[in-house]
Image (tube, rainbow, N blue to C red; front, top):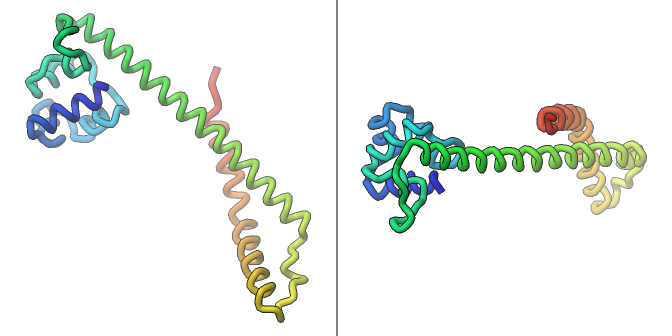
Length: 169
């Protein structure tokens, strides 16, 4: 919500990310990260942001006029803490999804490697005089040739990724 509000108010004021970053004394990428929801400004920067955008902090944090609280530092910190927790939860979920995708990739690569081992290069015994089987044999040979060269890299990368994305306890 904060990220969407920063972007909407900035655009409504006709400011570019670069112009806002100059006003705040930060790099443009910082503004971009805030607007993408990848990070949040600290409480001091949030106050400076509200001044630069000429909008109350409560509006940046998503409160409507009816539910506005005082812009006390404590209220701001509490809201930022909630936003940081939400960002941490999203990051943990993305890490978990990536972890399981890497496990699936490793399993698929291992299964294909096992299947190719069991088949023992059937393209060598293919009848290349028949155009249809010759074409199929060529594609199978190309797939096998590429896979055998790429599989070790994929398997190692998947294992490293699995280790790096595992849940640390």
